[in-house]
Image (cartoon, rainbow, N blue to C red; front, top):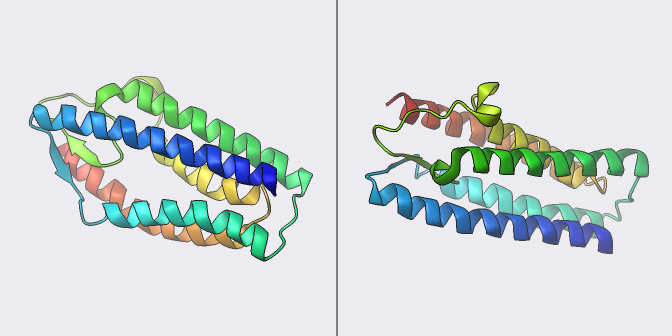
Length: 167
């Protein structure tokens, strides 16, 4: 469990780094006339992600979920790959990346990096991580609950983002 707690702690630190980048990028976008869309669903996304990071270790601890190497190691690999994809997205979008939906008028869509192949690659990373992170230590209830909640939230989020980008 201590190694899993460390993993969760590292993911929390990664999320905090994301928020620092997002806050800086939000200020940059606003200074250039950036318009935010979907403010009503954003707190629900934050809540789901915080719940994931709390529920997964709690499920492991309270329900005595074992570490099963045949499941845990591949899921850890998925978590690491999801982080790589997420930061590839962040690097590709540069100042335009945000945890919120913010569009700076007049800027063209990004079509480099993972955006050459996928319209929303960051959400692929979110889905993969949301399923894999709990399963590293067999917290399958958390994986299921987050996956269902995330599917509902991403349905709204992607609709809002597509409409905002269509302009």
